[in-house]
Amino acid sequence: MDRLEAEALDAYSRVVVDVSANVTPSVVKIDAKRAPGGRELGSGSGFVFTPDGYILTNSHVVHGAPALEVTTSDGHAMPAHLVGEDPDTDVAVVRAHGEDLVPVTLGDSTSLRVGQLVVAIGNPYGWSGTVTAGVVSALGRSLRGKSGRLLDDVIQTDAALNPGNSGGPLVDARGHVIGVNTAMIGFAQGLCFAIAVNTAKFVASRLMRDGRVRRSWIGVGGQTAQIPRKVVRHHELVHATGVLVSQIEPGSPAAKAGLAPGDVIVAFDGQPVSGIDALIKLLTEEKVGVSVPVTAVRGVRRVDVTLTPGLRG
Image (cartoon, rainbow, N blue to C red):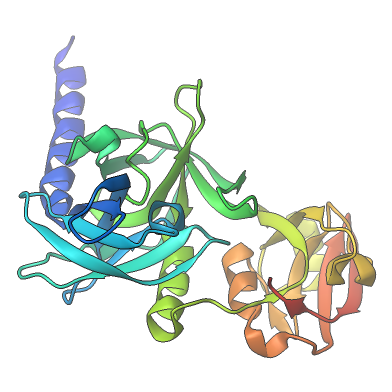
């Protein structure tokens, strides 16, 4: 190994060491129990994101648990309660009442680039504070969640995840959380996934306010995608990205309006749509039963339809 290779390895190692040292105190083990202090039903990970003990994790880690217990990286266990969960995005918020809980810094998942360094921290198989490193393998993936519904705009990484990592943070080189680890593909290597932190932040704010996320539904599965520059210029679009429709649910508002797989949604109810996060934020409860205009790009053509969102079941 020559000097340059050694220096590069040292720099890489320093980043991983610094990130793990800074973030691990915020990562917790979450045990689902039959009763407070009772037998464990399952476990996962989570991370403190506010000074007063709010914790982000996966919905599937805490769903249906009669009682929850949180254990910090230094071994201090405390009871916790579920604030709310959203199976559609596999995001949940738990609250623990303990002293000296250290919050993470939440980053911006829209700034991610394929190939950049990421670090995953969690409790696989109960081994607390486990650190793995890798890169962002791909962005904008769609993944079938534990609820059976499609999770959109998911981050793919090769940072190793195992059962028990679910709900832990995926962190960039600055130590900012850019994703919530959610799944790995069994019998495969290097195929792991995280919910984009911008989605998690939006959902968490609703859960903390209302305990649930009520949203309207149009029946599309999609991901953020680039639009060719000549199409952007021709139609004078606000953004060079939109929501690429990957599937349409039969009988849904989108199907009745004539949207089709391959369409790229660029505006909803008069608001420009730059990607899946932007569309999710516009699908509010207030839109249920209200006819709204939707603009999409189909090939090089602009398509304008009107649809009436339903209530997400």
